[in-house]
Length: 433
Ligand code: HSE
Image (cartoon, rainbow, N blue to C red; front, side, top):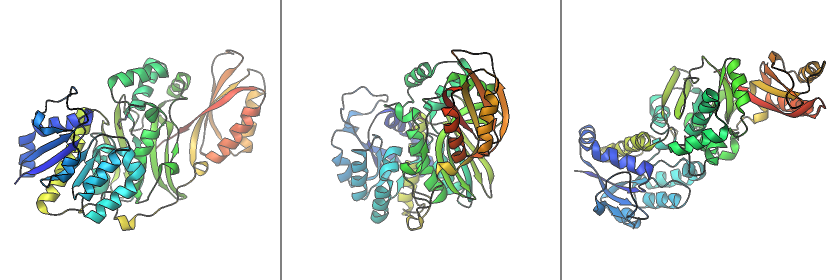
């Protein structure tokens, strides 16, 4: 017996997947117990240059022929985007095929519909490559940590942002220069605003929060702030104060409720995520039984993402061979046990903060600012004022003790109204983990 698969899309991830399936065919066969064969690959234009050599006979422009082929048991959707990816996934399910996808956007937007359809049809759906590229975070949450309550998951989940912040911090590049490099390196989304405005990270966090807590979550539930506004000055102040700046995706079970948020944050240099540089991703999970777990690796790219796709294909092929579909629920929880848990509003989140005020350099300025912070119960942990006036103002950097976001917003809007303050205050949260 052989297991036949059909692939839709032969771009970067498709090529990586096919390369691994071809080059490691014998090894995979030894692990699976039978040959795993690509029967068809649907592409828009068979004449385009490819990153992998594929026998022409495998290529087709007729995607429907994959759904119609009774020998194909697993369909692998690798075209990305919302449509026609959603339609192709639903058609594959309708045709009784198991589905592998790398498409975080389609799952974040249409997951409910897709997972219900798969359940009703009795087919499996797997998406390891949708989060963290080659890093096995999905399987870790669904299977390895199944006995744990997840207390917190903090991730560096967007390689483009991590690359940009690393280059800005270490080499003093401007945001635009660092973004250009990231795009040239090929891991940025086709529309890089998805990366830098935090939406790619939010798509991933939506999936991770559901897997960790069994809550149905939509993108609108997640507080999202990207890295567009970060200035090299703040990165260098942060460094002087012993912190590195990262775009974090955080879900956390607190006494006051569940949090899910994406924003840049200062983390201490000794934090386990501080050494995650360039395009690398990492996931720092706290389980009630296991304690701390750290996963690290490449979150994008042809071969790492292909590695995750192949892992899903082999998983589903094993299910086919043993006739044991629906063994592991795709979202970790039984669909009937998914709830819509309320998320804590961002205003209620408690954090330490970094502020950079732009103020005139005059006696009494600091006491005025400190007074407003005090009135709002915000306690100052450290203050530095560097250099003298540039362009009419001087940067004053403050670190606070824990404060509630609501109080911080109230205080900063009063401070920014002061005549002695010459530009909106820069604010970054501090995550100590
Ligand atoms: N654009 C994403 C990143 C890669 O930069 O991490 C795919 O998820």
